[in-house]
Image (cartoon, rainbow, N blue to C red):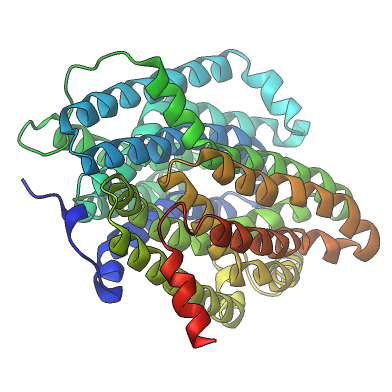
Amino acid sequence: MENSLQRKITLTSLIRYTFPTVVMMIFFSFYTIIDGMFISRFVGANALSATNIVFPIINLILGVGIMFATGGSAIVAKKMGEGKIDEARENFTLITLSALVVGIVIEVITIVFIKEIIYALGSTEALYFNCREYLLYMVIFTPFIILKLYFDYFLVTAGVPKLGLISSIAGGIVNIVLDYVFIIELNMGVRGAAMATCIGYIVPSFVGIFYFLNKKHNLHFVKPKFNFNVIIKSCSNGSSEMITQLASAVTTFLYNLVLIKLLGEDGVASITIILYVQMLLNAAYMGFTSGVQPRISYSYGSQDEKQLERLIKYSLIIISVFGIATFVLSRQMSEILITIFTAKGTDLFDIAHNGFMLFSISFLVGGINIFTSGMFTAFSNGKVSAFLSLLRTFVLFTIGMVILPKIMGVNGVWLVVPFAEIITLVISLSYIYKYRKKYMYDKVFMKLKKIV
């Protein structure tokens, strides 16, 4: 059976191949954004703030799924490229079970210590009830959250990205319908939002389960062989994605602490809105990167130098063009994006819109940083990938959060992410150039020198 990862690519074929994962990731972002829209409009700003306060725990769960998915798919795709298909299947099954076990451990700990965790994340007495309602029902569905994310990546590795797209769209539609039913018709508040989201996760999870149980497919579940090194390697290789999610949890926590002091609960609600929009716009970058990663890993495993050259060159072109387009469109549509969550003319709208106009600078360069980290994950260079993610999402963010608000006040808070992205861009480009020979895309730079 031919794997689509073997096919030679052109610029247009790469766009077509990654398009399903781009749309799939956008729909995944809708799962949370739709919740935010319904909660903000029909439950209230305090409820929206509550979901943001407990979201660091959701980030941790997402991080587990993405870590095993990206790190594991790089291992599996590379072995498929080397022709070791039986070993690839065994590793795939082992990594799947490992992801579920880790997720269930987090689920149990969270449920047992839920009150202590919520207050540690900065909840006030007024927000505690909504925090508990949202977090409890989200963590109950932890295995499905992990499997949904996990199968998003491995359906691409299996060569069927369109199936992942269809299942994600179906899950998104279920989420929208149930948000309306649970929140508006049944008046279930944030609990209804959490349940709608997680039931939406169940749909693509079962699609993935049934697909990989079918022995006729090139990549499917088999009896695993326990190999601790494979588990560790998948975790270390995907550590950059886990770091991104953990750092996101920390940065959300820091945003909440700073803004509740500067602007009160409206400040927390405003950054929640901005982070929702960022999630939507960054989803396209993440979707493209997750779509191209298995191709890079497969081509590296088969030592296909020409294919690697085309993949890196076309990817950088696509991401750069898309970055410019995203930046321009986000600023042109800023009012529309903000009014999804809150009415124009309110204090919350004014705060969120002012913050978004400064924050949106990050969309211009963030895509290159996301792709670069993902590219090194695909090459199984987890150290560089993790370093770039840690630098971008935590180290530079923390430095910016300490310095910029003192100099610029609230405007400094909104500029922290652009500050981190711009500095990371310089370092990302230097790493791309440094490893050009090792990963066989040196001709990309040779041709660039000729043009210059």
